[in-house]
Image 1 (cartoon, rainbow, N blue to C red):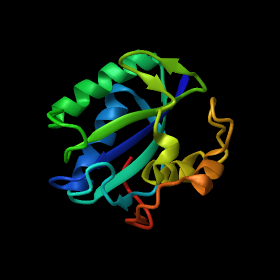
Image 2 (cartoon, rainbow, N blue to C red):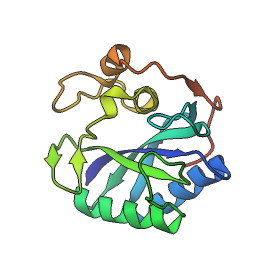
Image 3 (cartoon, helix red, strand yellow):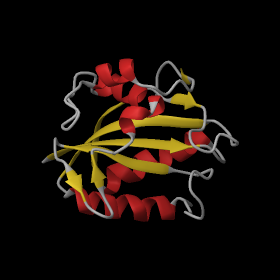
Length: 166
């Protein structure tokens, strides 16, 4: 059994429904969600001329390899309406692998840990809800330390006090 940490985001259509659908399908396809963060509303990163995102971090247990998880995520994103026409475009759903156990993977189609996560407050804040003391395998800092030192100053606001989505 592997421990998988994902980050989900959406900024078009019914954002909450998009997260709910993604979580439902992830549990059906990839593995059991054992922990989830609050939902956060965040300003768009990269292309800031678009609607705010809803973001959430998920901790799952899976029997799949990291590469198989990536294949399943790409298929799920497509099924839910994600198209990759341009970089940082608005999206129905975005699902990123942040950590897979404590593995370090550098392949053309998969980099784990996510190579930019430590520079993105919208990723670190939800992660701090579910794995605050987890040590990044290459940076050797906890999620809380990475959040404290994060250079990104974009707003990250808790969207709801509690989340019913799993």
